[in-house]
Image (tube, rainbow, N blue to C red; front, side):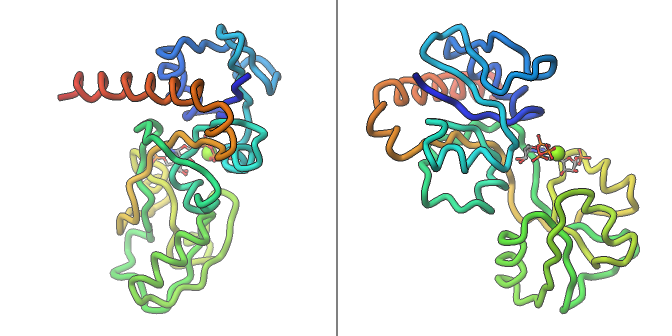
Length: 213
Ligand code: PRT
Ligand code: MG
């Protein structure tokens, strides 16, 4: 049995067509079902539906053989304990700094609200900016509005969330997309099955980039 960890929401939606091209179609829909383990049209493959930030943990400990996780999540988790064989190029966005519209420049000593503590720390350190990082679990956009922080580090897609809160994107920290991750022991023990899946994903991704040329 191969177990693949996927989070609900945009990663699940974007991963479905890739899985389908590999003959893997879930028998339930996580939107309507409360099941956390989904059987698929392939009797040897099941999905586990978990929080995005938990995907690397499940894969690291072998509770799932494979997973789909955002690069943002992987940077925070640390990737040494996992294989990351493929950029699936799905759930794409940008990790950026953002400030209130009227802020002229980011101060040399800055208070930053984010859930990406490690990534933010190393980003500001690399630019020689002294940053005090305040860990939040959500609604980062609120922090500058209520004086909790000067700036935030968050994911930006359309920019609408920032705009709606009087903020604007500043500096790009990194382009983000979701990656296929693999448990290291599983990569050895279930090599044939996992490699076959990776190869199929590669074919689908190559077809997609061809179609976009
Ligand atoms: O939502 P939940 O608390 O359950 O967990 P989660 O937020 O970790 O999961 P989910 O499904 O929201 O995001 C999973 C992954 O999707 C992230 O780890 C990213 O790799 C990827 N992704 C891609 C995004 C976005 N785009 C994105 N736009 N994740 C979040 N956002 C949020 C962003 O944080 C901000 O609040 O969308 C808002 C900005 O969107 P725009 O379009 O208004 O700019
Ligand atoms: Mg979310």
